[in-house]
Length: 330
Ligand SMILES: [Zn+2]
Image: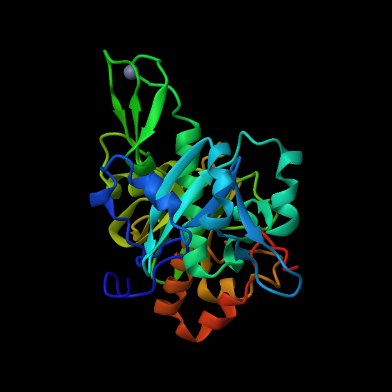
């Protein structure tokens, strides 16, 4: 991955997985993978991921070997191939139809189902990316059980990477959906523009963001969202990096942009507050009772990289500012 971009990938991104798209076509191939004893099962239950949390240690993805847990496949609503790492296949199972009490045998011995948003930043990067991938793909299956063209049921094909309409007169293919969203750090050389949504925890500030609309370029979406939310005009919109964000199905496309106007005219429907902050302000955020975005988010990366470009001496101080979303460590 490091040869694809000049810095390490954002959290939930991992380039080392062989997605084997060329063999997903073959009928029966997924069944063969599930017969392999070393295939790893990545379990999801109603948007929650299966993890092992042990006191005084970082949580781990609880991936189960198919050899001992093949019976789980029969209970799965959806089965989707994720990819291979070092020759070992990883297959996602959606156990949502199983009622909670019936999961007890599993959860008592191997881990528990929890919201990835709560423990994501504490996971090892490959495991975090795999759980995010599984969650996003299975969420799509959960919500595309019927054809959007004719209303008939759909069925999963191609290793869980497509659904096809079962109505012979329709047979429309449906592909996993990823919604592009732009997220941008706007700056004027000395200050950066951060805002907060009213529903966020008190004191939490982040970069502006919004969904790309049909017919827009990414650069236009950046300029429009910044204008709509803050009344600021921007120029020099420059791509930074991207991040899968399966909560539930976004791809965050990160940008830095230069402000060409500076008076904030806030859209009260969108933001509760928006302010210009210098790197020094950010370094003092904790003392001001303010918080920065969570560490696994591209928003935090955009802020940190901007601080590094203008005041590298303050990078560590800004890095130490807590997020408003504390994660439990035990
Ligand atoms: Zn159809």
